[in-house]
Length: 122
Image (tube, rainbow, N blue to C red; front, side, top):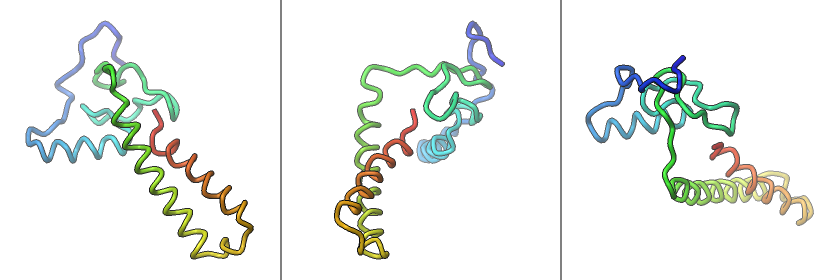
């Protein structure tokens, strides 16, 4: 475990030098909820809270002003299109089309709320 006074262990970082490969590796780590530098799991304390430091390499996760702006916008767009698409698919391709309109709307709203929460935990 790295204490808060120690410098990050850069020798544990496994970031490729090639820009494209680095982007792919970083995206894979992000989807796996792992440290973007060393790939270690355990950077989240529960589902929603990001730890202050990586438990393995000790990198300090610091957010800059406006950090979440792009992430929120991208999450909202992707989540709502997925939620709407799934709602339309469920309502028109399954027996849910026989439900009253109010229940179809409840399903669509529930998906519109669930997808952003599931896709953007922190």
